[in-house]
Image (cartoon, rainbow, N blue to C red; front, top):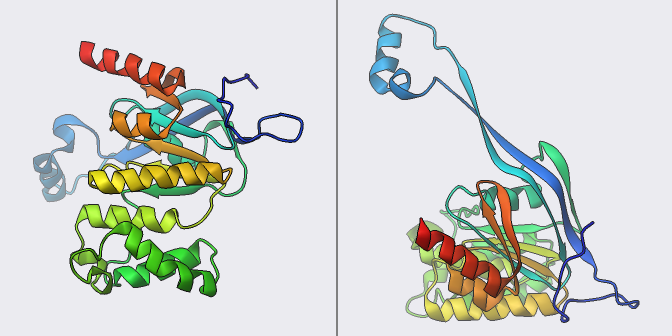
Length: 271
């Protein structure tokens, strides 16, 4: 395993050794997409002609190699930013670390059960925000007593009740920003060995982003590891001391956030 330059505030063992929480070893992640083809053969008109003529549909298989031999080690107490252009493999890699997608080649090792928080995290639209808080906390393994104590704090942190009593309204009445804030607030209410955040901070206002960034720092101080995927470079700089730049499924750079983000911004400006 390659030695990484980790800041001095990273948690250590009694003998001064850093504690790895996530090891990604030559990981390859491939999507297999089944369909009727591409171009004119996949158009609605072509599909209608096949139906009228009762012609069998010839299935095709396309493979998308989203992550190509990525390797790195993350340590307890780190906050690691994942940056890169659209389609670079960031969200796919998070899903694999969370155990939601199998690795085609290589391996991923984690300490404990990573928790993935994304903008598409499941919420029950017909239930109230308060009820979703209760169910979300129970799903994370919190006891009913812990949930009862935490519910009001979670709702206050999310800010959904600042104007009206939205906590009693169905989740389907919430804006995407309100839903994202509540998802983050639920997940951040529990200490995690590894917390994976996929763009969840991008939909909140500046005040909520500041609260979220502070909460991430607290999670790190509790000896957890945080991964943050975001197109907001300012959020990465404010939250993460280390960043990994993925491009076309490959690690282009891994190091201190200031250095990596500057290189990434120069790259994007030159395109």
